[in-house]
Amino acid sequence: MASRARLILMVLCIMASCVVSCDKMDENGPLDGNWQLTEWRTADGNTIVATNHTLRLYYTVKLNLLKLQIFGAEQTFVLAYFQHTADSLIVTQAFARPYDDYLPLDSLSIYGCPPDGRFHITALSHNTLKLQSQDAILSFRKY
Image (cartoon, rainbow, N blue to C red; front, side, top):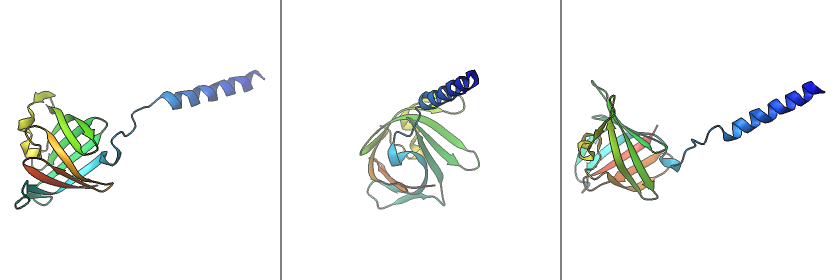
């Protein structure tokens, strides 16, 4: 009888720990995930600045962090905090890796980020993302 009570108590403890153990669920809907740049155009849409063949630019979104990364001879990336609403993505604070030094937002232009950090989300689904700023239109695919 005591072993059965002990088993029930153990099962209840395990179930309780599973329920309260992790609250780090996706909170950005389809924006969460890994995004590969497919095309970077000027804001007027007339000039292609880069494509996925000329620039290997990736954005990764998880919780309240945005990772901006360029793959190449020298891999570079930045971590940034952001705010997300239905139609906007606003980069609020950025850090250089690996030393976590603060970066001014106007230094993120190589990643397609505007000086004020404000993007308008013109398209967002589970496999496409289009961001527009005062300077550029960035198109991504989810991978």
